[in-house]
Length: 286
Image 1: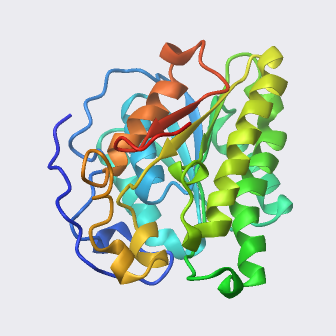
Image 2 (image 1 turned 180 degrees about the vertical axis):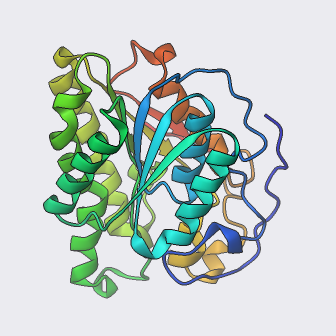
Image 3 (image 1 turned 60 degrees about the vertical axis):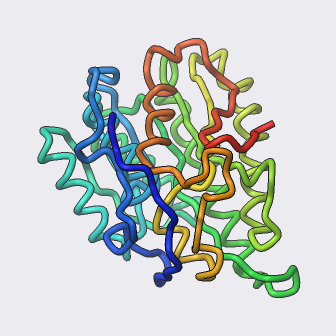
């Protein structure tokens, strides 16, 4: 894979949830840079938050590795979802669009059932959908945001794993998106960071619980990755120079994280479970 390294990111803002089309500079999701090696032939994959950012890159790369992909996303992100689907299909892949708001157990159960019906079963569940919004002090965090953040970031992965465990038995896997924020939290992302720490614990517990049923459970912990979540949830001064504080001195492209998901979903990771794989530009995840 070859791609331009992200130079210093300028200040910019978007309305939440944002769109990858307006990001400057443009991120790489693997649209042309990913080199497929047939690592996921005929795998059936559900990816939440699959319309843009890390989810889009994971959908594109997994489809190019031979997987049948279904993506969950918010209805207001329809344009990005359709672009992701078109990109995958233009390369000969398969992508199904399953919109919905995953803040309730009913919505997660509905998504699980629809994914099984659409794909004819499931081999890989990628719990990637997430919400964050930064605030300058503890007192400024709205009560409704705390509940919303936990519903999307923690409860949804729990509910989806619960609904789909039977279908993933004997060789399936679950991959959860956590974050470097679980290890090095930012005060203005207090609720978000705590959800990612909770997910680390959930992954270890699920790996222990589901291992005897032949299901691997792992997490990917991204560092500063250039996605619409950044300018749509952070003040402009935080966006300016985003990622420059990493040892590698830059933010990462979404496709650079997607490689970790492809590995964990593949047979190459058949003895990997209960682990958190950091893709952080050198920031520690321990």
